[in-house]
Length: 101
Image (cartoon, rainbow, N blue to C red; front, side, top):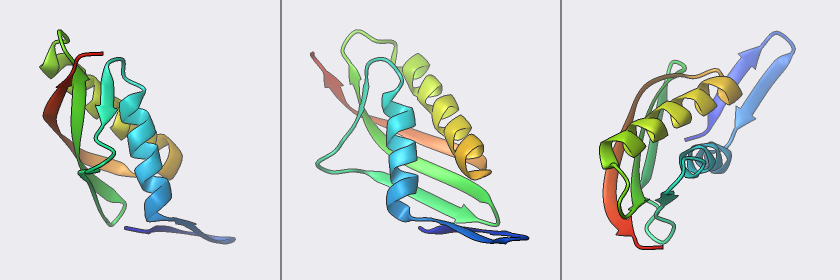
């Protein structure tokens, strides 16, 4: 979903690819996480500057899954708010795999 911000001096368009990169980099910035790249199960819905994100992660074996998932939720919401001015209503995380790295 492309996100367009209308400002006094013109518009700023943030492409789906850029939004996806923001979400992936924020999620993978949390220690022990990886966004599934092959399947890339990531959704992003934006309406009236409000966003809802859904993503599937692989988390390192031995990590406390709810704690890591919560940290990903916080980081993704903060990145979208900071970089795009979005009000993130929800970040839904699915743990789809455990990494043994």
